[in-house]
Amino acid sequence: MIYLDNQATTRCDPEVVSAMLPWFSEHYGNPHSEGHKAGDLAAEAVENARAAVASLIGATPREIVFTSGATEANNLAIKGAARHLARQGSERRRLITVATEHKCVLESVRDLAAEGFEPVILPVCRDGLVSARDLSVALEVPTALVSIMSVNNETGVIQNIETLSALTRQAGALFHTDAAQAAGKMSLTCASSDLMSLSAHKFYGPKGIGALYVRHKPRTRLQPLFSGGGQERGLRSGTLPTPLIVGFGEAARLAQKALSGEAPRLEGLRAQLLEGLERLFPGLVVNGAQARRIAGALNLMFPPGYAARDIMAALPDIALSTGSACSSAEITPSYVLTAMGLDAKDAARCLRLSVGRFTSTPEIVQALEEFGLAAREARRAS
Ligand SMILES: *Cc1c(COP(=O)(O)O)cnc(C)c1O
Image (cartoon, rainbow, N blue to C red; front, side, top):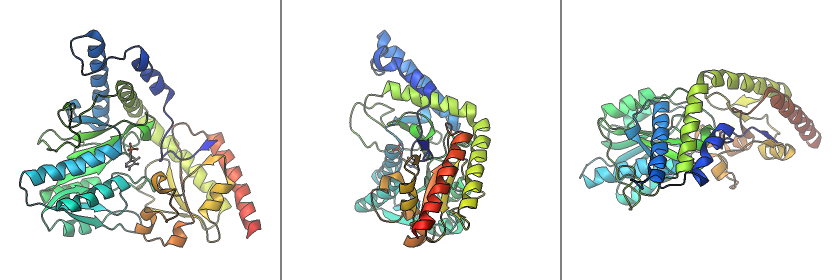
């Protein structure tokens, strides 16, 4: 199988797996059990990993709260911040986000409407970018929080976070960014955000672990989602999964080390893939801003007459996606692409392809050969 679905998830790096293994069966102490060696050892491993994750985004270790992934981190950031402000008696009720956000952000914001908050969903332009003007207008009403993703999971488009967060802060609101698709793939700083969500499995770490960056100075205050033992500075109760956290830390270390070499390599593979596909499918269109795109990611609209589902069905040995993995069971068109102005018919011709750390040049050559066969077959059928 040729895996071109690295935006859905990535293969766990073998070095990450080796780093994790001893923490399952040899060093299995509870990191919250202080005073005996097994617990202390686990706690130390957790703190080492926390430092590595913090370093990846330029944070301090105390600003990292481990969660089960970016879904939980997004829920904690948005609901936690909004509920804290409400409890403080704040008059700020507006929550601003964007139509192309991950479902967990959109649903968190919409769920808060039932608690008296006012959700505002900003549109995007054809290139997938949010307009600073639209945000400024929305911020004219006192706003509790703005949540805008750093990189989109379907298109790979990079938002202008610095500008958007500066506008947000001028308006006295908190700024959260879902950086699940950015972390480990581009240089990333937490400096412009009050809250930032991360997920290990998007950059060669294990599934089921992520983190929320919670700014310390000035401190971003949150109401926790869970009641319990008060772990993670009271923000996330539950026993920390030492093996997953060690894997997350190792993935962060590897990503930080590999970053400068990996991005150009992925850009090269992506260019090779795109050039080949443009030859096979004249009239192919790249969805989303070309100049502001994470290395390795492509979202393509095939020429009229081709259906994404048919292309996918003709390529059983290539892992691709017609939209976000979470909604691919539905037949509805991708809401990300329709928010960018595509109609349902256009969206049905779109595929997401993404190369990653383990993609090789021969695999791209092989994938292009298979795409060529699929193209000929589709033409014959029509
Ligand atoms: C994958 C992803 C998520 C969800 O992360 P999990 O760790 O799988 O919960 C959220 N936002 C974006 C942008 C993602 O790509």
